[in-house]
Length: 146
Image (tube, rainbow, N blue to C red; front, side, top):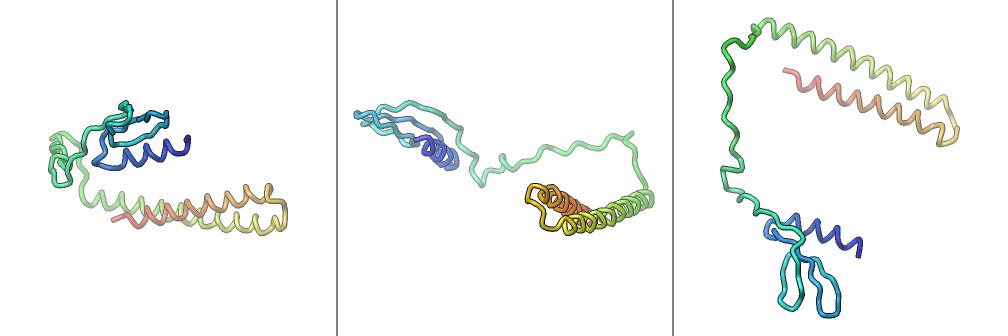
């Protein structure tokens, strides 16, 4: 019964037509969680949701009006922005090179550990995975540059 309730709650909350969840008990005391109230059972409302906006409704997709940039907002020239972008690219390239070195060091440490117990190898594996994730993140960030 404990497993059934979360599953029913998930199903009931995920369907757009089912906006109300009932706990119904029949004459023999059997409890049923449903989104359909039946006449032969005693039902109480557990939760009720407002209907979701229709897919074609533009109100759901409407963006707030853009706020104009204040006149005294600091501006950067195109050449200065290019220089900043170039600096950012250089910093990310340096960080990527460092992380690639860290991956190699961590892999070497894992290899050198040999056939030790899993408890001793797991921190080394975690370190390798961390540096590999960092490399992936840096490559993604570099790919997002203009």
